[in-house]
Length: 165
Image (spheres, rainbow, N blue to C red):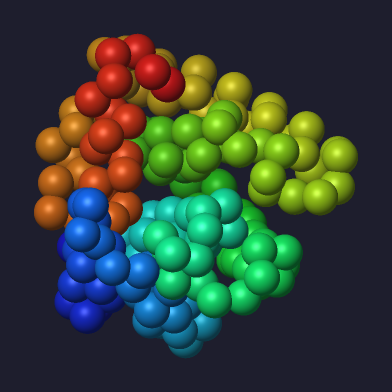
């Protein structure tokens, strides 16, 4: 795993009923690493999750303190940038297909304000699911996500659902 320990600790502090709204702080650390040129896959996965989650969930959960529309304007371009960076290598990466595909499947209408872009995200949700199921016909093992912070906790929960995505 190659994300800063401080970011992982902040993600871990957000998990569960007594979780703290620390995801914005974890995001800031990872975004700074990304902006400095770190293109590590693990960092990308966490940044994809945090940028999407921060754009769609309320402040009391995430810690992003801007009004909702401002968060979206700040976070969704990062989500798109990270996806675009990894898009050319995603075809056989079951985890990345699963993560991006599930997000696009659930929230295609939230990932952009442009109707054509929304359709693209809807299509990505369908295409990535098809490809993910070709690579992993029985679905991804939730254990893949263990000990990987809020990112892992979130996607492990979905992966436990039989045939959910």
